[in-house]
Length: 505
Image 1: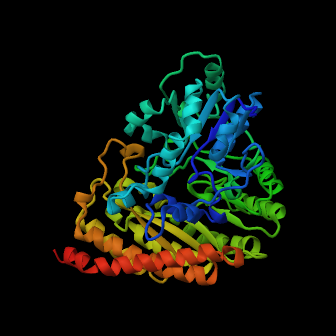
Image 2: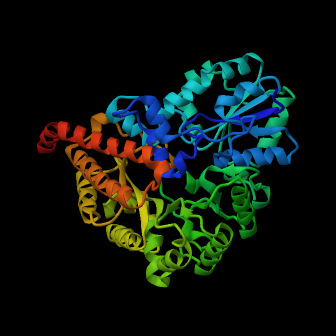
Image 3: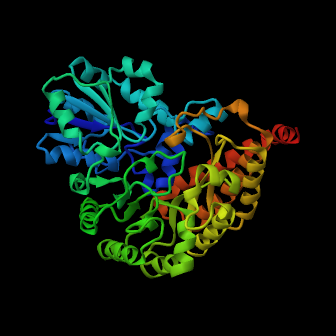
C-alpha cells in the first residue's frame, strides 16, 4: 500500500547509474546495434537498487531537486522506480515525469535515428513506460500527469502523444519557484494550464533551491547554473548565472556518501568557471571546491560533467591549475583518469565567430582551432578524457567550414578522447531554424563522420585496456563493449565502398 500523493518517475534509460559510468548512458541515445535490445538496454542502463517501496538509492539529480522542494513544502512526495509505480496507485494523486530526451529528438539521439532508420532505445523505453498498465491505471483513477525536465521542449513536436497519454501539464524551465503552487492546485482539482514556460525572470534564487534529500546518479552535485558564453545553439545560456555556495555543495556530497555513493561528479556547463568573474577562472574558488570534495570523499573519484576548451587552455597556461588540481587533489587513491564532456562543435574560425563567439573567450574566435588543439594536449597530459561533440549542419555552414573541421580532427589524433558528431538540432537562440536532415548530408560530412568514428574506436579500445571498467564484476560490460566496437568496425568495412564512392562525388 503506497503512501505518496506525488510520485516522480522516468523510464529506465534515465533511472540508472549506467554501471557507475556516465559515458555508458549515451548508448541509450542510439538504437540496439549488433546485440538484442534487452541486452543493449542493460549495457546502457541497468536497473538500480531500490527499497521495499520502490524508492531508488540513486536517482536523476533534477528529479531529486523537485522531490526535495515538495518534501520541504510538506507534501508526501518521492521518486519511485518505474517498475514500482503500481505499488502507489492507491495514494497517488500526481505523477511527475522528468527526462533529458523524451522522444529522442535531442543530439545525438536524432542523428543515430536518422542514420540507422531505427528508433533509439530511449524513445522506445519512454513509450513503454507511458503505455504500461501502471500508468494507464493511474490515468483511469484521475491522477494528474505533469512532465518537465531538460527534454520538455520535445512535447511540442509530439502533440498526438500529449493527447493520447493524457498529459495534464508541461513545465519548461527551472521549476523551484513555481512547482509548489502547481502541486497545490493539482491536489485541489483546480484547473491547470496545458503548458508553462519558466523564463529567466522566474528563475529561482539560491535560497529557493533545496538541498537534495536522496542520492543522485553517480554522486552528481550541481555547483553552478547558467553559462556566460552565449552560444547561439544552446538553451543553457538563456538562464541566469548563479554559483552554489560551498556549504550547500558539502551537504549534497554528504547525502550521496551516506547512501553509499563513492564519489562526487561536479555539474556545471563549465566546472572551471566556478566562482569566476565573467569567463576568467577564479583559482582560489576552484582549489577550495576541490579540497572540500577530497576531504569529504577521501579515496573515491572526483569528476567534472562539462568543460569549455578555452577555459582549460587559459586555466593551465596562466595558473598551471589543471596540473595542480589533477596531480595534488584528484588523481589520488584509485583514481587514474577523469572523463568529461566538451564541445568542439566546429573547426572553422569563421563559423565559430558567427554562432559561438564567446566560446573562445578570453581568446579571439579566430584562434578557435588552436585553442581546441592546445586544450586537448593539456587534458591528455593530465589524464582527462574528453567526450567531445562536433555539430554538423549548423545554419550558415559552408563546404569550407566542414573541411576545416576535418582538418582539425586530423590534428587531434594523438590525444586520448572520444569525438561524437551530432546533426544540428534547433535549440537556444537558433530554435526557429530548421533541423539538419539526411538529404542535406554532403561528402565532406561523411568524411568528418568517418574521421570521428575511427578516432573514437581507436581510443575507446585503449581506454578499456588501460583504465575503464576494471575488476571482475565489470567483465561482462567490458566484453559487451568490445564486441560492440568490433561490430561497428565490421559494419564500417562493409559500407566502405559506398562511402568512398560518395566521397568521390
